[in-house]
Amino acid sequence: DIPRTLEYLETEGVPVITYGSKFFPGFFSPSSGVESPFTLNSIPEIAQVLAVRKQLNLQNGVLVGVPAEESGDGAVIEAAI
Image (cartoon, rainbow, N blue to C red; front, side, top):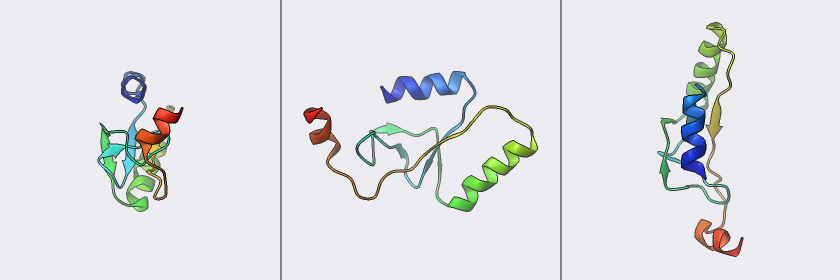
């Protein structure tokens, strides 16, 4: 349940970033259809976020969702599961 997971992470102060897409990736597809809280479009941007968090000595993690370029049709895979 991606929406609940993202909500839980938000309440725990864990930033969620999606690389290169406004939608958080699904487990078996590049998009879950759930809008990502934050989208960054380059690896250096993500690295900068991580570096600043380290400088601030923040202790919680960061979740970076990276949509797979090669994946199957998420709806077909979910139905099969």
